[in-house]
Image (cartoon, helix red, strand yellow):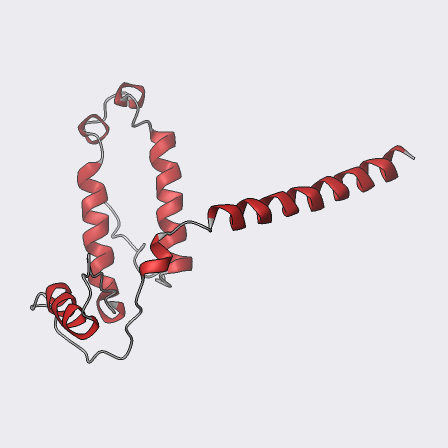
Length: 147
């Protein structure tokens, strides 16, 4: 009987929590948010990126809409350069590692940047690169054998 009561109680509480979350969302969504002031522009021609596209689009949108545009953010298609970007990111992460770790000093002396914290970030980086960006890390993890 205890198991059935626990199941029914947890089910009822989960449904109640879902209702509270939905009500909170609708209550908070009554006010203006960033999503209320977004324009999604699609179908722009390919561009090299040497121009200041954000300023060009901001000016054109202000002219076309006759309204003040606060800012423009452009999402770039960088899939063809993903290998080079991964190399740059790896170099940046390597440069950020504490100097004491590179010198072979005690890892506990690294302070708040402990090895456990860096391992957690490494796992999160791997998740972002593989699952979100679709980058295959197996071909990048091949390192030459040491002397």
